[in-house]
Length: 86
Image (cartoon, rainbow, N blue to C red; front, side, top):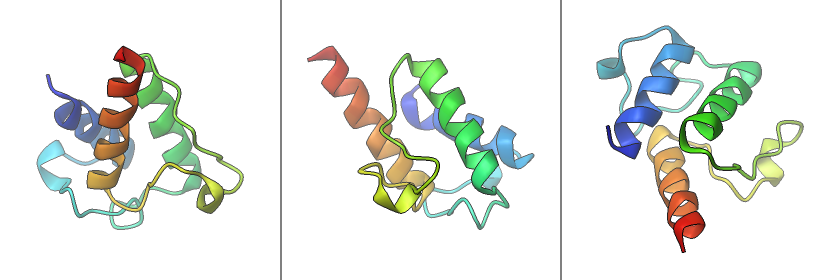
């Protein structure tokens, strides 16, 4: 399973949706994911990929990690994985 599919699966599970209902343009709000759900999703993503996401749950806007859409989250995870391998 590639990064995109795994991230979509995790986010869909958090939103209690089918992965097919999650698009790259979906925002957490579109999917009904609140701040706690977003934090839980980030923890699940960190665990799945054995990475640390630079995400401040107390102030997401102050984070360098873009959580505005599913596509941005996927891009960020792919970048973190690449940096970890480097």
